[in-house]
Length: 426
View 1: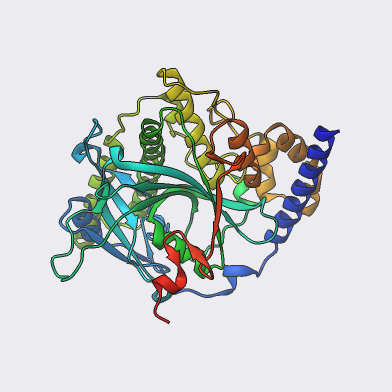
View 2: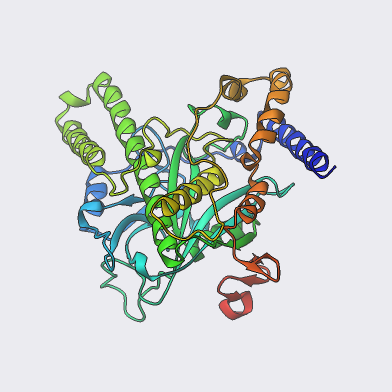
């Protein structure tokens, strides 16, 4: 009886999802209604200065600046400078493209470089962000919280007096990378050719602010990993290896694709343009050459850099990071205490019917609904709202009085850093 009830509830949730997909597929709605300024490709000299640490902050215009190929510069993924990082115990890891300090209302995004010490991670949380409507439809992201001195922005700002900025927590968020002004459509995202994967990194307050401006709350769970702190360290390394790997593959093909257009447009023969083209090519080579120290075929994102709304979504990639980490910890001999991955850590290929949903009309959606229902019954965590329960059943959540520790935060009430009246001028 219980299983029948669960299946019935699941069918209702998937039915609601299908309705949302149909609604998302309508023309003339949401962000597409608002005209944005014409895009401008970033100056490659600025990109090089940031990568080479000549600058520690990269300021971009959120809705205008793009990378070659037209993808949003504000959505640039986190990159790890492995050559200048030390992943041994007590070492520091250098991250690029941490979103912190920009003003979303003024249309400015600031990307920072930061040094983090994995051995000073205090805890890791799963943050579910309901997107409106049924909470089964939520964004999922990981939050790493550091002890004092565990993380900080590199280089500082010598032109600013007063107290230095703090970096107390780091958000790892997988998202659908697209051009500015292009709204994410869950239906279109069924085809992995529509959007690219981007693994973005934020300071906690920056991400919370941006979610608050979209009227979104945080629903937070604390992870309980084999090995305690060692498990948290391993999760950070795995999450960064996955994100950095996917990012580098994406950047390489984006520049390669842009190069073909540059050649068609004759940029190679234009002295003013050709020098910039050569620098982009050099950056492409640098992006393709770096590799992470996590040598595990299950962390290889080659050929898997397309965002897919069910298999490679924000929530499923966060869960995959946890499952792969738990599997690696158990394989390394850490006591699991009954904990296990929620499922076998493998990134599967999307079936043809799932890809076809990306361009299907309403009749095509309804035709494929039975397959979607069957797939969701067999793989319940493709529905983000089912992920906390799956983690609980796998013994991977911190429990309190027999129930998962859980906090809900809102800018209208309590935030992770205190009540809003403790943070804002009244």
